[in-house]
Image (tube, rainbow, N blue to C red; front, side, top):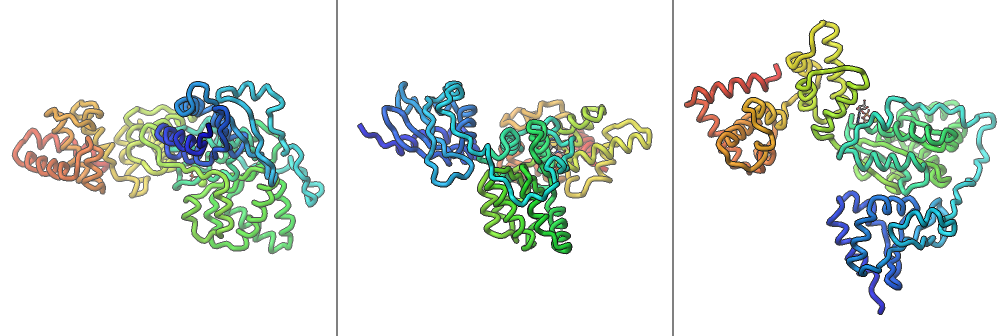
Amino acid sequence: MSENFEKIWQNCLAVIKDNVSLQSYKTWFEPIRPVKLQDKILTIQVPSQFFYEWLEEHYITLLKKTIKKELGTDGKLEYSIIMENHVKNASPYTVKVPTANRKALRNDPVSMPVDISANPIKNPFIIPGLRKVNVDSNLNPNYSFENFVEGDCNRLARSAGYAVANKPGGTAFNPLLIYGGVGLGKTHLVHAIGIEIKNRFPSKTVLYVSSEKFTHQFIDAVKNNNTNDFIHFYQMIDVLILDDVQFLAGKQKTQDVFFHIFNHLHQSGNQLVLTSDKPPVEMQGVEQRLLSRFKWGLSADLQIPVLETRIAILQKKMYADGIELPKEVVEYLAYSIITNIRELEGALISLIAQSSLNKKAITLDLARQMIDKFVRNTAREVSIDYIQKVVCDYFDLPIELLKSKTRKREVVQARQIAMFFSKKMTKSSLANIGMHCGGKDHATVLHACRTVNNLQETDKTFRSYLEDLEKKLSIH
Ligand code: ADP
Ligand code: MG
């Protein structure tokens, strides 16, 4: 009975795809290759030992379920692990374990892959007298994993970073490229990786450097005729963290030298961690050969945190600094500043400074004035979320009701008012406003705006509602 193992794996993948996020699917399942099926044992090939461990740790239940579905209760899964650390033509190493039997693997010396990275080739060029331990890592101790709030916006990047910190150079994530907009935590996260590695492996040489500094150092080296020293210095780093690589765009010579350093470090099994404000495909002015190397490992993005995460970040910061603020003030900040965590923190700091200089209590009013003065115009726009919250507080309705589809009279009215103010005070499209307010379409929003306008003219009580709300919402 020769079943088609590829077909079987395709079937498994179809089930898996429905059960994990697209990002996880691409990261963890697309790179897997089915190898054979024998005696109800399906063998799959994974790119690394780390990959195998990750699958066993995070997806074991799902894998077991799908295998059982395809092969019956006595179906088993076997991993074939491609040897890490760049041994060309090495045949894949097979670990004979049924799923969920990781312990057995650990205790079975015969099954353990040989770690050939233990004896890396020594760099013959290391500058005599320059001891590795003397390298200052340039890490900011405040940017630790403990201080980094986890959320959906950063989960993949954070866990990949953590995995790298546990096994620098020994995971499939080499290089690890973290990308995302300004102020979303790229620098913080890569520092956290560096700090964690330093804690776990004190003898490893970790270096954090901004691309700007790297470029200037290189230019100086060229001027002073010691580019070789420059290159050799970077080639002996175990974990190189290069921040904001987009800065290298258009700088041909610096890219060249980084290309060689990258290759050397990567081939020696050393870890590279990079950040950028955009994904590799969108980096212009960076050479293709470099871009293609950036894609060798894992690119993970940081997204804009949702409201709850923004509040959690503010709370963590307040806790660290021993500050207490009224809940409404914290919420107001988190509602008002959306796209940039640095600005969010900046607003918090300005607020505290303001209040201590003027000896005023930190109130919602003070927060409003401050936001008005200190935060850049773009970030100052009230958000639909904030409008909904103010409207719901005013009418004492739970916000979930407003976002639901219910047609209860008092909810419908509050929802229409929220739509009306969203139209008036934000740049959102009608469709977007509708989506936020109970999944309505743009026609419904338009109708709501008309209704509110009409009532405003004919109904005195209604008009006073609007005036109250307008006051609450205006940030002047
Ligand atoms: P980027 O390098 O992406 O421009 P940074 O790493 O400098 O952003 O982050 C800006 C500020 O926001 C830093 O003070 C950082 O500590 C803070 N920050 C960003 N993300 C988080 C997070 N998830 N948890 C806590 N603080 C964060
Ligand atoms: Mg940064």
